[in-house]
Length: 129
Image 1: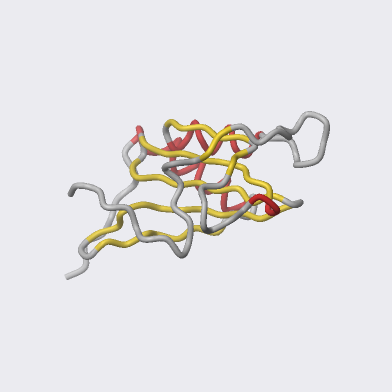
Image 2: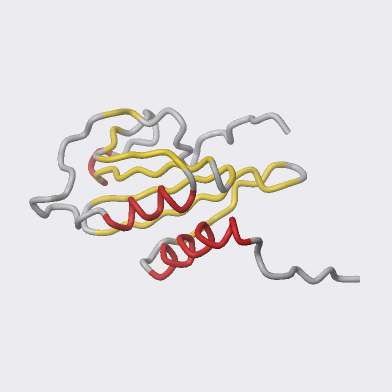
C-alpha cells in the first residue's frame, strides 16, 4: 500500500519554496545516494562563465558556491568567487540574489577553496548514518 504524503510541516515551507525558486532559475538537481538512503541533494547551474553549486545534507545544513568555469579542475578543490553555508532557504536565497557574473556588483576574486563541495568524478563522502 502506498502511503500518501500530506502537506509539508510549516517549518519546511521556506526551504521547499527556495528549492522551487532554484528550479525556476535553471538549477538541475540530483541526489547523492548511499546504499539505503539519500545522502544529499546537489543542484548545479551553469551560466555566463560560472558554475553555481548547491549541496544540502538536510534542511539546516546546506552550502553553495560560485566558481569560474575556467577555474574548475576536477583534480583539485576549486577556488570560489563566492560561497556560503546555512539553511537551505538562507543559502538558496543568497545564491539566487547574486548579481550576474561579469557585472560590476558580482563577486570577481576567487577567495577560498571549498573543502566540503562534492564534484562529479570524486568518491562520495562518507557520513555517519
